[in-house]
Structures are given as C-alpha cells and as structure tokens.
Amino acid sequence: MSETLNQAKAQAFADQMMNMINGGFLALMTSVGHRTGLFDTLAELPPATSDRIAAASGLNERYVREWLGAMVTGRIVEYNAENENYKLPREHAAVLTRAASPNNLATTAQFLPILGAVEDRIVDCFHKGGGVPYSEFPRFHEVMVEESNQTVVAGLLTNILPLVEGIEEKLREGIDVLDVGCGRGRALQLLAEKFPKSRFTGYDFSEETIAAAQSEADKKGLGNLRFAVKDVARIGESEAYHLITAFDAIHDQAQPARVLGEIARALKPEGTFLMQDIGGSSHVDRNLDDPLAPTKYTISCMHCMTVSLAQGGAGLGTMWGRETAERMLAEAGFTSVRVRQLEHDIMNYYYLATKR
Image (cartoon, rainbow, N blue to C red; front, side, top):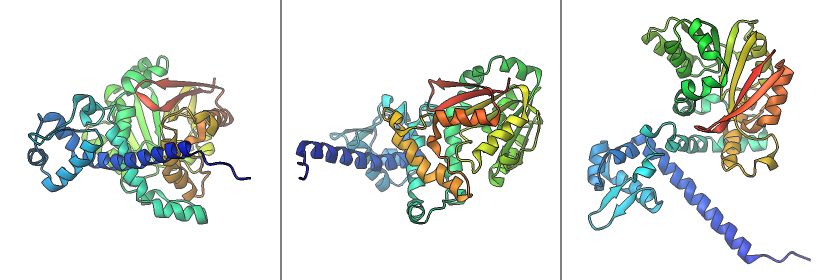
C-alpha cells in the first residue's frame, strides 16, 4: 500500500527549494558585487541613481542597473522609486564590504562561482572516480588569501596566538616557527614584522604562491623569514621548531596522516602545534544543527576532497571532523590535544597539540 502524500509537507519543501535556488543566484550576484567593488562604493555614497553609482565605480551602467535589480529584490539594497535612488544600509555594509573585515561574507560568496566552474569535472568523478587537481581552480588561491586575511591574519595577534600560553614572550625572545601549507605567507609576514628576533619558515607545494610570498617578504626586508617549495609529507626535519602552525591546510593533503607525523617529528619536545581546521563532527548526524554544514560538505566534495583524490590521496575532506582529527593527532605522536573555538571565526576549530 503506497504512502499518502502529505501535500502541506510537499509544498513546504518546494518553497524551501525555491528559496534555496533564489539564494544561490543571489549569492552569485554577491560575489560579483564584491569583485567589482560595488558594495564598497555603495557604502561610501549617499542614496544615488544607477548612473551615479556606475560613474563612481567606473563600471558600465547597464550592468550595474541589472545587478542592482537583483540586490533590491533580494532585500540587500534599498530602493526609492520616486527619485530612483539606491542605498546600501549600514547594517548590510557591515557584512558586505572590505572595511567590514573580518566579517565580510561577500568574500566567501566567491567560492560559489569558483566551484561551479568545475561542476562538469566533478560529475565525471562521480562516474569514474579520481579527482580534480588544484590546477583546475585558477582563482581559488586568490580567494583563499582574502579569506585567510579575514579569519587568520586579522585575528592572529589578538585572538589566535594567545591560545598558546606564553608564546608571545618566547617569540619576542627568539624562537623557530614553521607554517605548513603557508600559501602566500601573509600570517608569517605579520609575525616576522612583529617579532624580529624569531625565525620564520613557510612551506607550500605551490611554486607560484611561494614565489609571490618570497617576493612580498623581500620587498618588506624581512630577513628573518624564508619560504620554500616543499611536499609537507616529507618535511624531513627533527625537533627543529618551537611552534608549528597549519591554517586550514591539513584536511586536503594527499597524505594527511604522514603530514601530521612529519610535523610531530619536526616539533621540539616542549613545542606546540597550532592547527586551524574546519569545525564539525566526523559523524553527519552530529552536524545537523550546524547552519554552515551544507556549505562545508559542498566545499569538501567540490574542492578539498577532490584535490586530495586527484593526487591519489586519502580524500579526507573538509568534514573529517573533530573526532578524526583528535585520533589522527594522537596517532601522529601528540599526547595532549586541546580544542578551542574563537568568536571571530565561525568556520573553524583551533587544535593545540603537544608531545609532552
């Protein structure tokens, strides 16, 4: 006997789906608004016509007007029909402009078009297995630099470093620090400037990002900072560093267990490994109350998991979760692991791992 269709439930779900699809398109326009600087322009202007907004932005008015249509009907920008003026409320600008860092959600919206661009490749992987390599995500590093500036660099000195007890005093005196998967090295540049007596090293597999990082460090005259292209699954150093950091870098490694083992070996006995990684549980049913869980699983499927699999790796994925992370840290040789969350960073956990 077939189950009777609950019409009210079906309609409610159809409405939910329509809102989701509408929100997806609005998020795409949010990315456009961020990349073109339209949100920043609107935040600085008094209520203005599309002509004035386009002129102030140096953009084509016809495209600006159509974009504004999406923003108005999406209840992001306010519109006065009498004088055809548009206004971005201050409360909205607080989470949509570059001045709003680290609260700028428009930065995160850029991931939608980036991931959408590889949809065909991901669909192929569903049928054939394998993965999509880093080279297929041309803007990913660029956006990650923006995201890292908001979540890591902006809060590094005030929120993140204080998690490691006594570390600031040690940094002032002079210690050796390694950042694994350093990208363009903005966090290390900040630390190298702040603590000139300490010595900083950044490793990443990307020749392009390391070249950019070293160039920026050289321009700033940071003689206590060096970058190198290295497979962090083969660090090959023993008890060399007082502090090792990894910001959003472990879960998409091809060999995360080996990377953690190499980090443990490279850390001095009294040192600390500070790992920022995506917050969540290893069990899907425990993530039901996480409002960002669908975003995290999608990013995992369409980037973090697939780039690992493309290297013949473990495909651990963004949502490897706290339980798996703590187990793998223990297996790597860390005897103590503490987990913290920070108010300015709603996406991540911070793991403090030691060998003593």
